[in-house]
Length: 278
Figure 1 (cartoon, rainbow, N blue to C red):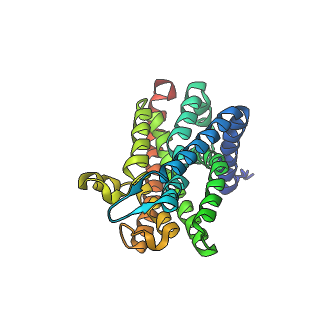
Figure 2: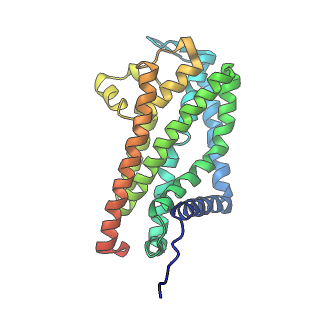
Figure 3: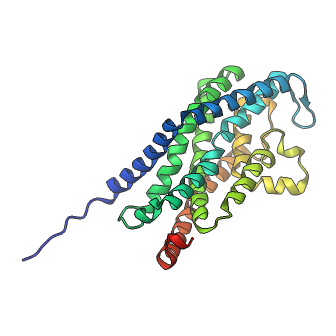
């Protein structure tokens, strides 16, 4: 007598795990709603600060901007920077909490894709940040007077950089399992993505050595592309636009491959030592 064991399809299981992990993050955020409100207030203060700053200073040099155009320069960066927590703080904190609570040990005793768990955790952070992204996006469109085509292209830039950030977030979460010092690494990366990548001043104004470092960051190209389509003829891109799109896409692919490789590394450590020894 032949007994056939039904094996469920991998795709529904993967998507189910992603959905469950994302919902977990959303439920936690709803439980601690004052944290989200506080972050919204922080964003409002930043916008007000940039609005005042743009009326009192001007950028000189190859990229000369002042007044309304300088405010668009700042808002263009905020549109991308707002998702930095997706890759740095949120996934690392979530995985660290699950590690201490024993949730990760339970996860590794189930035949569910581990990558789906980490991916869902990061996507939950993306969904939460959309609450802050959408008002900024609408503000940029209205303030810069963008047409439909430019608006959709900027949205495409944001989606592409999000693909890089989601994979980077998975990598940071996995590093949080392997190394307890990953929090320090996340802090350094946050500084690089905000200051070195050119959130507050053009990369062309940086010293040559720092510019080289900036070119290695995906945010640099995302900032530059959004500013190119927002400021149009008033902004000169670092490289030809087609090349910048290619670089951003290459980062998304590279980070995805690295995150899959790192997942296998974590699984080997888990099988050898167990999470209680990490």
